[in-house]
Length: 233
Image (cartoon, rainbow, N blue to C red; front, side, top):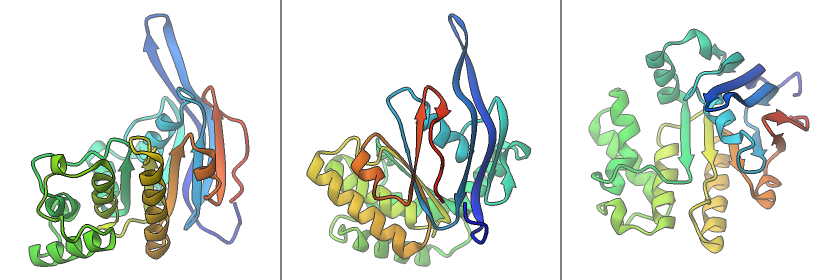
C-alpha cells in the first residue's frame, strides 16, 4: 500500500474456524492485507480456498474467529449487527453471482430498495435516481418487469444498478459472472468496471477467472485459507 493513499480496508491476523463432524475446520488462517481507497482488487483461488468467506468478513456479513477488520475506519468487531448493517447501507454495494433480486419487486423497485430502506430521500428522488441507473445499464424499457421475466444478463444489470444507486464507497462483487454465459459475462464486466470508474468506488472482486483478475489493479491469491502473494497497492 502506498503511504499517501488512505486504506479503505485493513485486515490483521484474520482467521475463520468452524466446527464440523471431525472437529474444527480452519477456513481462513492469519490473513493480513490492506486495500487502498479507489483501487480495484481481485481475490482469486480454487473452489473452497476461502475467498468468498474472506469477502463476507471484509463486508461485515460474517464474524471472524480471530483478528481484525477495519472497514472505512470502523473496527467491525466493535459494532453490533445493526451498526454493521448501517455501515453497509451507507457506503457499501454488492453484486452476487446469484443476483439476489427480490422476486416480488420490479426492476425499478429492486433498484430503489436500498435508498428506500435508508428513508433519507424523498420517494420521487429515489425513483428518478433508480431510473437513471437503469438507463445507464441499458434497461430503461424494462423498469416494470419482474426478475422472472428478465434474462440472467438483464438481472445482473439490475443488480449492478442497485449496487451503485447509493453511490457506494466500496463495491464487493462475488463471482459476478458465474451464472452467465461467456459473451454476456464479458458485457457485464465491462459495464461494472465502467460504472465503478465513474463512481470512483473501491472494487473488491472474488473470481476464479484469471483474465478478469488481471483487469484489476492488484490480485490476492488464497490457497487453503492462506494468502500466498502480496497485495500490490
